Length: 419
Image (cartoon, helix red, strand yellow):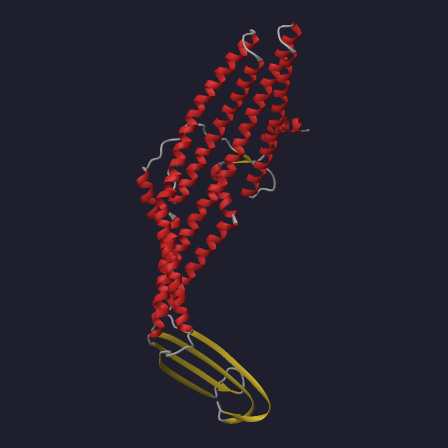
């Protein structure tokens, strides 16, 4: 069954829906719950900032209607007459003329919006990197299945040669047994690789919102280019534009603003309010109208320690945010260096793996000819076969490791380095 699966899966590629890498990233961004949540946080932060700005221009407004019916007549203070029902409408407006908290809220919401925007950017790159990982997994497993199939074909060809040599009496029985063992191992590896490919296609389908497996359109196999920036430029870009570092700075500013607002409760607040009320015994009252304007100055003296607790909590949050920002900036060089060197190392390894593949292929060709001529043992031939298969697998793995390393570096920098 596994052998049949290994053969049937490659034949079914043309019948599967396929996506390009760009299409997969675009579709995944619309479906990833984490990215959808990040977009929602941006909307929430935008409304919070909009409300903080409107507080300087638009007063708070309230409109209400009260209708009451009593079991016996009573004196209606609003109309000045006895009755069994009372209807009151009121319109109230209030405006904070001077409030430190309102100024602090404006600064905090500005920083919160910047943090949310940076968080959306960070999550966009994280979603793209996860999508790329699934996309490359499909392509890598597809190529690894081809490598395993080539190994199986070579083992079958070698088994035929070994059996012919044993029949002719120029080789011992163990030669065909060694090759038969290699053929069995190749069949197992091919079947496992076929299953891995099927699972990878299902994962890619899930990522892009498909109900079943999805195939990945092949990418170019050109050598990875050198990075267009130096390591020092990468560190500087990360600190200036990197989403995680922008979030840390914005969180510190927001925490500092909230601390300033909490301390501002020691200062008096000036509030101007107005209200208009209409009284009657039925709806749309018109019997009496009453308006008032109030100018209030308030300064709480003692609130049972609630104000002091709020200030202490805000100061601790500010200190934590500052420590997180400083720690992130200290770690920037390490993070960028790790991602930068991972890409350059993977790029160099890919070039070396191609050379190793060519060497392994030539070594296998020579050992195959020597074995056919009786100048090499079957163990030397099988060893050359294993080395050739491993070299082919290394080429595939280093190729996509390079692409994934680039995605990791771009996620730290918050920008694409290549088109």
